[in-house]
Amino acid sequence: MRVGVATDHGGFSLKQELVTQLRAAGHEIVDFGAHGQNPDDDYPDFVVPLGQAVANITPDKDTGIGDWKQEDIVELSRTGTKPDLDNVQGLMYEVIQGTSGGYKDMKKEDALAIAAYLKSLPAIKNKINK
Ligand code: HEM
Image 1 (cartoon, rainbow, N blue to C red):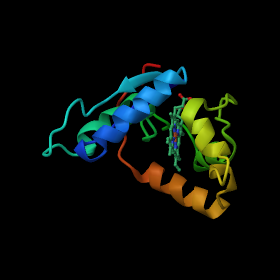
Image 2: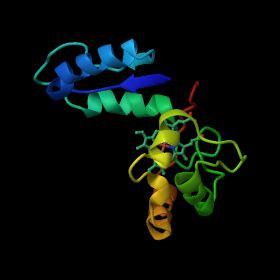
Image 3: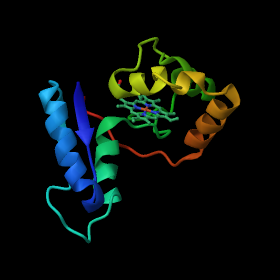
Image 4: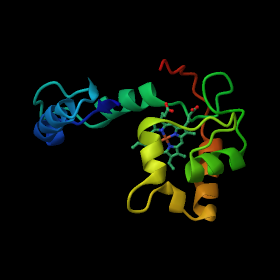
């Protein structure tokens, strides 16, 4: 699996250890940083670029999920199935299936609340290159 990792200085050493273990297990790592110890750096500096590389779940119609209905987002978060009937892949799939309480076990009203929140966000144009 291709796995993106990101931490600030607080998690830097742990990230290096984790990257070594994930590579040994055969995964491809994309390291968004930090790339050294800098006490002045901050987590959003690294995790925002990671998030922007993974998926666009803002209501942008061209590059995001602007065409999805609220029920489509609920369906994806509880089953992994997208409106085009493809299944979501990778880490998102693991998050849904879980081994001890994945999103598939989430209450429908909670999934509806998350979906309503996502639909309320401003649309951001950001095409994901997989
Ligand atoms: C309630 C919280 C979440 C919601 C509603 C959500 C929603 C989504 C949606 C709608 C997509 C599909 C985008 C598309 O194909 O156009 C997606 C993809 C993805 N999500 Fe989530 N997500 C959530 C939490 C998470 C978490 C916690 C992680 C990682 C720890 C994650 C990782 C991913 C990844 C890696 C993809 C890309 C999968 C692929 O390329 O098929 N998501 N997410």
